Image 1 (cartoon, one colour):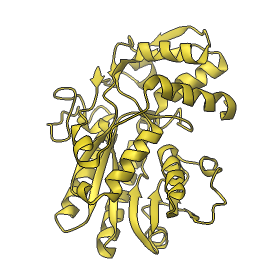
Image 2: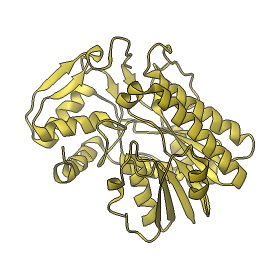
Image 3: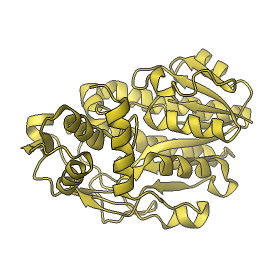
Image 4: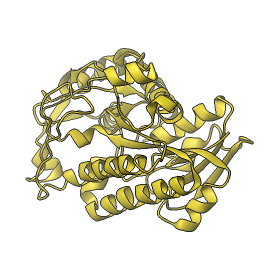
Length: 323
């Protein structure tokens, strides 16, 4: 079975590609390398069952070539990461929405199943936490640029479920702060990646705000497992799944954990969000998933604890990362 991973040279995408190859699939990667890099695939770059196409998911010719012989698609290509979104919200919306629409339409024409990657950002400020997939959403105003990403991914979800009504076998995964080796300090998973980079340099760990905001983090191999099940199990089609961990931690406590894991006794430095992102940036005080749907329909539950995942990430960071 041949599978296409758009954005397969990115952080999560490259781990997904490695897992698919290990499971015996033939894998095509389509990536324009604007966020990902071929180095993320260095461990499998010469694999006989891997084909890499450098191209934009919005390009009909590149997408047509990538879909040749494919039976399932994992659509991860997107502009991600707060710095990139704030730097170019127009491109964020165009790539995320137009790219997803082109993938969904092409898959519907060819009868190919597709799993669309979304984000916990769609919950916005949240009505209540933990948040379940069917809960109401509460986004901020368009004058705050950070919501451009959330709106683009929410529209992706609407497009996916609209195509499902036309018979497309499609599922959606909402990632909650995936982290691990190869995370991008400027893209997805940037909080832990930024802390790791700073620890490696011996620099202060920069905590934005007062650090009391809480998040849940899921190790990348767990996120890949949930994604595989959502993309390949028939019971998943037509549904949205939170792919996250119920374990919750404040950003300040996370920084302390990283100091302990790395053994780097660097200080913690506090910066206001307005200093980093401008006066209109809105931060969310809490974000944690309700995960019963993934457990019930996919048989999926995160297994790697935060302590274990941070240790694995640091082992990679100190041996493989160049900063």
